[in-house]
Length: 410
Ligand code: PMT
Image (cartoon, rainbow, N blue to C red; front, side, top):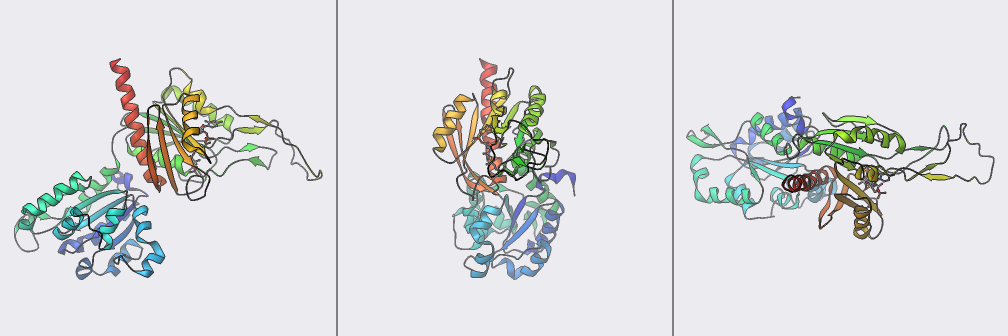
């Protein structure tokens, strides 16, 4: 794997292929993307299937190719909304003049254009067409519309074209497209900052074989670590027991109990700029750990629990303190309870999630957050934790830099 493209490792890339002779180059592009460790799913327009067969892309991506908007079989597998949510980024390559025009109009009458409307992921496109078509004011104005809407334009390159003319309009090469796509994930908004994150549950021993725990998988915290690293931060992740791979270039410290998590956090707090507490720390632990396995002789037993230290509040009241971000896992009165925690624990920002169901929050790949700060709030609607994490890191970076600026100009 090319080191320069590690920001694509594990990413879900939806490769949209529209009708143009450069569609054959997208076969190589699919391989290049997979070489980085990205997972690739391919969507082809009807016109694209005239140039290269879906079977080629099925073999190269390892997944069935999607091309129909209203196809019962596809919808029963991964429906178009699921596909839109699955993507971390959409790359349309080649993007024909017609596809660019359709996207600029916001149409939703084929699968690719519908996905672009339905996704919250970043969308990049690589124009590919004859030089005169590229220079046409209609095409230029459509590209300007897409740029204004947040699409990233990659290329085009200049050179000899399929029609024999020489000029601007060639699709960028696979390696250039992979590099450009990777840079979308490397935002640099936390460049040079040190971020400390807690993740996962804690286990509080009852006896040598039993413990108190909760349903946290660690996915939210690990996604935040990955997003903070992509944003340029040096990241330390303090993880309770969870079976997840360590994100690339992130320092990981494994702990088991709340007491161990607190000790690890306190040791590293002086060297961090931003602290994010996404761990589901056990609020209580057994008052004593029984030395031998408890026998099941008695009909009833009592377990006395004592309060664990509050790691987040400890960091928030330390001096000097980092920028402090808490989470609030609530089953009712989400915003009121989160605002109360924000004030009581003296936080800079809190991310509240509703954990009353199973489709978001604990153990799920998805989450939805209400992000609250002293004089404002913002909703991050349901999306994959990778997407939510990137959005939350964006908000944290914004408020962190704002506070730094205020400090410096006070
Ligand atoms: O791990 P996943 O399966 O991906 O699920 C993600 C999540 C639902 C666990 C995560 O999004 C989340 O909400 N984490 C916080 C869970 C929690 O313990 O919330 P709380 O409302 O009980 O605690 C409030 C805050 O205080 C949290 O930031 C928590 O980390 C912190 N805390 C709590 C108790 C304690 N003793 N020390 C703490 O630092």
